[in-house]
Image (cartoon, rainbow, N blue to C red; front, side, top):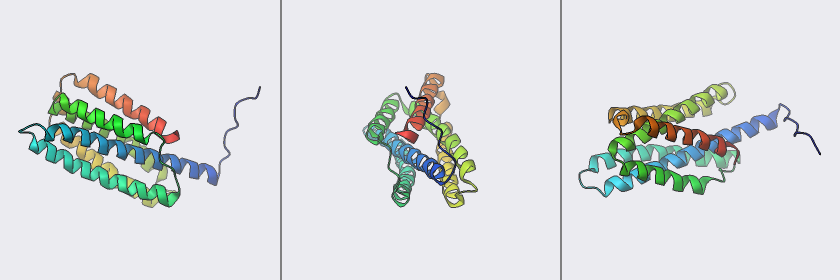
Length: 187
């Protein structure tokens, strides 16, 4: 029987591996966000009188699509593979978006608030980690984080915290996001 695997030695390989994890998980997060907004939009576009909500979601989705395209480019530039979970995250994100939209506008906004709260904190940690080593990437992440904060604030203004079962719904979505982050970094 062998013992536990030795810890990696500090050095360039470790830094490269960590950067790969950061890019992989951020790409996965933006992919999931696009899917969530698509799911929500699909529901609200099918309901008469919800055109304004669908338009707002389309705008948010467009921001996330810009982020996703940038991470696509970064993965290619840095030769980092995307998460193996991408097909699952697309389906899960769409289902989460559609499911919360079917619960109503406030539940859809609660979903946005929960997701963006987790992502904002996640980006903040990455920005601090990368500030000295990768200042240009840290600056891009700062811009993306600011977009996520704007989405969160808009969701709160639209009544996210008034959703039926808000505390439970928000807690479950946040826990799911945190689990997806851990999985996507490695898988």
